[in-house]
Length: 219
Length: 300
Image (tube, rainbow over all chains, first blue to last red; front, side, top):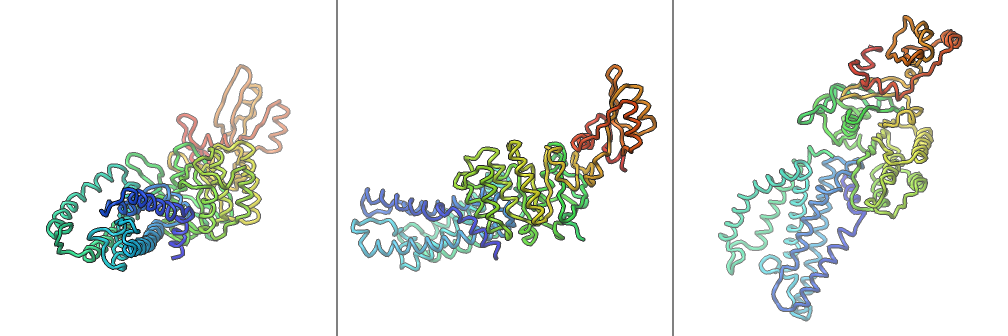
């Protein structure tokens, strides 16, 4: 446990990437959204989710893993420590999103009818549902990104292509399931919380896959 | 006493090459050992396996009494400083802070005084360091970690002679105060020779020589002078190499030189020069065409 906490502390020696940068990005996008005005949701919040994915890729696919192992971390403690940090950050950012959404709702869109933190269908319920769904979504993307990073480190570009290729059928299945469940339409048979449950289950599968993949990584 | 490092029949194969081929060696606790050999001999692969960064294809590896791969107890007490270490995009002080809580015996005072000696600013981005400064950072982490097993892989690429001397002096001083097991790979053999208690030479993935450094000093001697005198002096002794130039000859003679031999050489007007560690290593690395390794020829 101590080793995993050390890994998390190692990632946090440069906190700008976990705190300052994502918050600055959110603020910038919010400002752009506000300047454009109007009551439609324009994908601004998606960026924070993408950021978590990229951060996951970076932490194991980039330069953090080699120095982490040089500092005496095992692959296992590095993996679990990094995932724990990502999940904790998701918990915090989920709360930030839920809090800002509550303010947005209470102030009638910041007094300007802006819809930024209220995402149709997905993040549009009570604050705890928003917290849960964004927490699960951010965590899922972080560990999914980690898996990409590990595949890249072990097998390079060809490995990444193969990794994407085997997921194509899954992607098609998701597209069919979406049509079938009516998600995105006026009468979805799957609620946002149901979807959150599915994503949480997927996250567990992804975590296990990443763990199996990092076991033979070399630096 | 259990050795700090014990390797038996270690082999590492890649797709089309064998980086290590049945390596067996032991390194005693509390010694400084030189790990020598040519480029591509397998030194870095061996050190990476010892540090758990790479996996063996076969054979057994024990560091501090256990296999190092994925072993928290061992890795916490070990540090490997690599010439090609990759650092995240952060500053020198970030790397040191991370090292400080990952190495239980970290000495922050030593780290900052080393950085100071090398003129590396803690606030500088690692990306912007020169080759020599990057080496200095590696050396700083390696020494300040005070790890029970300290592995250096060519730690001073790009460092000038003065900076290298700083490394040797600091290593010896800190080693004396806090004994540990040091395995140092280097190409600057004669320069580092006085540090080594033991020497391991690796050649094409095999151990070509594994011996106490003291035993190597005076192991072979170059005899040079007039051809006739050289021939009579070396008659009946094992010889490695003979070179002639006109009336002068130079012969590398194997074995210790006695006091009587020195008298005789003086009276014959011959020069006796012991072979340096570097020259011995060049031989052990199978430099002479068609020769077997040094071990097989003389010590087998």
